[in-house]
Image 1 (cartoon, rainbow, N blue to C red):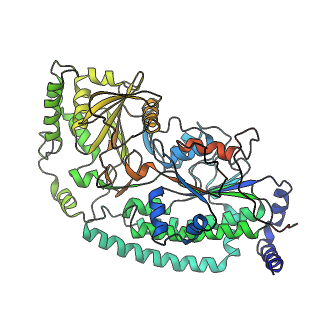
Image 2 (image 1 turned 45 degrees about the horizontal axis):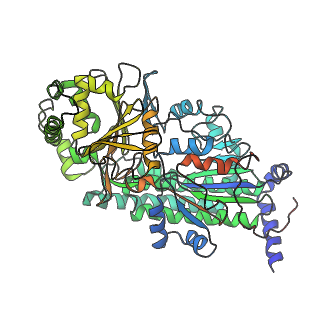
Image 3 (image 1 turned 60 degrees about the vertical axis):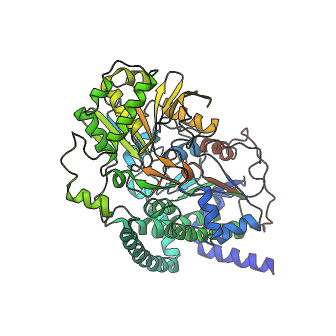
Length: 584
């Protein structure tokens, strides 16, 4: 009976994928083991466990409970953002990628991780070869060296638009799956209606912070259309024997940002992804040919958040611009004191904390305006918040990426150290204003021998190896970095040449498990604090040895590189499933 079932499957796939028979024959001339990676963007280990417990991921539950797959969590490192994480996984480096959005002082240019031209700028600085050499990538930030990179923002060689969209190959896939296409149209209508209802009631409760009319259509594109097309492409690649396949499902990240990482809407997207993972698992079992190892992972998590603009009535950029431009606090920075004079500093930060929470800064315009007042008090359909603030008057650029922000002084052009900031009265005033601000969790600056971190509670020096010396008060990273691994990540971020002169983490409340998000989002990541720092890796038993250390996404790179470099680290493999020989 089992042989008959496999024979029927072989016949079915031969008919269905007949146009790709030649491609399959060419690839299967070499039978080296391949790998498939499914990345669920922004799904934290804790939220995956919660989704499984609530019944949103029955197939993943079976993999763990029945098939013995191993689930582990690992540190997301810094920044906890997809452009850095995928660079680390694909190429083994994330140097000079300090955030989703950042500023290049030398080029006077803002880089945004969703703009193709900017991502191509990053890609051009990465190695040409990656873990996907000769393979395929779908819906990723970079190509990873893949021969076929579809729905991907940047490749080693810039692609034309039709190449990025898959061209005739994707069109042929659509024609080969008419029933799925009809179902996709139906799902699109359901998706639109469901999201509008959820959004409306969320705004009535004050749980949702902003409205863009096109967001439902954007989510239909990612949650329905793109999800189906990338799944079909992965199934075809498994059939034809691509040596390496990496695909990213972004829908959970989108919904978690807008509805919360533990919301029913976000978890509903996990249920849909769980079904697609089931389709891929079936293809791996049914399509004899190249043997594959399957990895399911995330690149970072998300922490529930409150938007800075909703909490304080203005954007972070407006706050900093007011202080830097109008010199509100310059008088506080002109006194002749040193950091060792703790009594003077205590008085200063108390005063600055009061000012930062007040809505009556002398330089602030009279009132916030009717629109801003309504948005602050009722959260109904507020305008889109900025994510970059460039001020020619103050010569300050602020880029914020969810819970992480970078502040740059455009002059001088070199990265500033803590000592340089402290010596200048105006910069020192802005620095202590941000240290005292209740929306800022900590302020990180460069030091010659590491990073300086300061909060209202205390300040410390972090060495490149992760060791820390508390200089005054208590541990400023108590709620953010509890280990040498976490502190090494902070020191590494501060050491990047294009990191901000000031690096800001959104304030994190460990007891209530939420943080301040500098974007208008209620799920945040980018910095540290809570679930954003803990992604997951799910693999068959023995595929990744128990003693293999993963301290950062960069440690995943050798696991995949070993498939193309025999001299790389070797990990034990899980027992092979029985496969029926199949000759094309």
